[in-house]
Length: 237
Image 1 (spheres, rainbow, N blue to C red):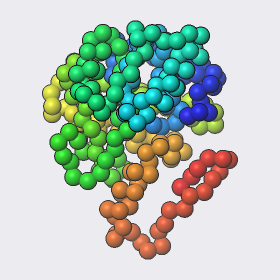
Image 2: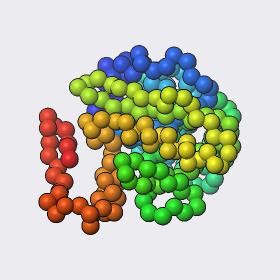
Image 3: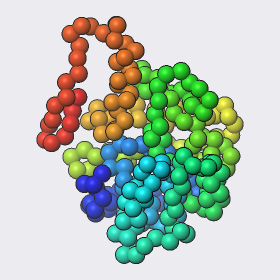
C-alpha cells in the first residue's frame, strides 16, 4: 500500500464517487483488496471520527501509517476525538468498540484479517466463495447486533489507474444471532462479483485457493497446475 499512501489523484477519484450522505455511525466491513488504505483516508477527509481495530503485532506500525495519513490531509496530528486505535487481541475489544460507536465514531473493520478454513467452531461463521468454504470471525456481526448499528461493505479495486468502489447495495442490520451468517455471507458475495483482474488484487486470495485446491486435489485432472507470472509489473496466477 506504500504506492497509494500519497496518491492524491486516486484520493480525489475516491472522494468523487463516495456517497455524499451516510449513516452515522457506521461499521465499515473492508477487505485487503486493491488500494484499501485509501478507505480510512477518504473518511478522514470527509470529517468522520474513526476507530480502527488492530492486532498487537501491527498496532504501532499501522497506527503510525494512519496518523501519517491524517497529517498529510490536515497538516497536524489527529486528536483522540478524531482518530483512535483499539487492540484486537487484548481485553474485551468488542466492549471497547461498542463504547466508541456510542460516541459516534465510524469503525473500520478488516474482516479478512482472520480468515480460516476447516470445521466451524465457537466464534467462527462459515461462508462460501467460489465453491470454497471459509470461516470468518463473528465479531463484526455481534458488534452490529449489540449496538444496533448497521454494517456497510466497502471494496475498492483499481484497473488502468481508475478506482472502482463497490458498496453493498444496502446496509445490513443484524437483529439476531441468526443474522450473523447471512450478514457475513453478504460481504463475501460482493467479493464473488469481482472480475478476475480485480480479484487477484486481494491479498488473502492464496488462502482461498489453497484451501479449495487441497479439498479438490483428488478430483482434479493430473495436467492441471497453477503458474505465477507477471504482466506490466503486476502478479498473475
